[in-house]
Image (cartoon, rainbow over all chains, first blue to last red; front, side, top):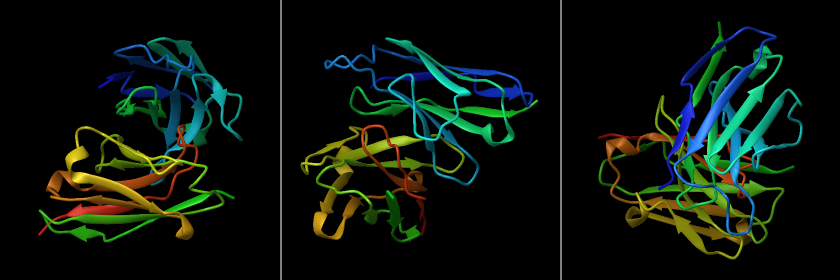
Length: 112
Length: 114
């Protein structure tokens, strides 16, 4: 199985500040069709996860441009600029290139 | 608008079989895949399996021997059945659409306990 190593586990931030979350995979996430199926989600307390970024760098509908994704191969990053209160919660990366699909263990974004 | 909603029993006895239903609206199961994902209390997410738009399935090898996913396209429903439940199967169970999981249900909490 592809292991997704997500860091940090906890990320204290100030409102208006910037946050960066890393996700590294144990093997390349480039599919045989050339696409890279690495996605990012935010799960707020008591809610279902919500898609933020799909295929590395594409913002899902309605996601503010404060969220950006980058990376390639095995190394990926989610950046959040100008952090707002509604950005707090647990962030997960997911790879859906290889079976079984696997998630990172999560990063808790919390107030400093 | 796209909606998914899970339903099923909140409590299952150990060694019994879990049956869950994901009812979808605003999308066709013959054009969309649906996955099941679970999350134990206070822990991370685990992908369980998927039913594709053509009715084919893929499962997480860790639970493949216990899991079955099926559907009824006429009722817009996807079903999960998992047997030989143990306490470690206690979790919130979600269904989600597509390869990107762009829409999720609200989840259903399942507790395995006698």
